[in-house]
Image (cartoon, rainbow, N blue to C red; front, side, top):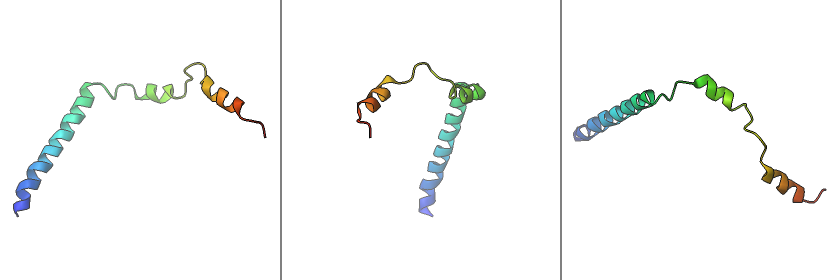
Length: 62
């Protein structure tokens, strides 16, 4: 029973920490543009990385 004196405040503190984190993400507008983030991953940013081409062109052809 003595362990409950320790576990109950710890669990309440962790629950409060989770609630504060959730409220912080809502106030920081983390969930405003979910569709835009999903579409942005499909768009190209510009030129492809040139270092990958240089690495493959140095290897001998088999």
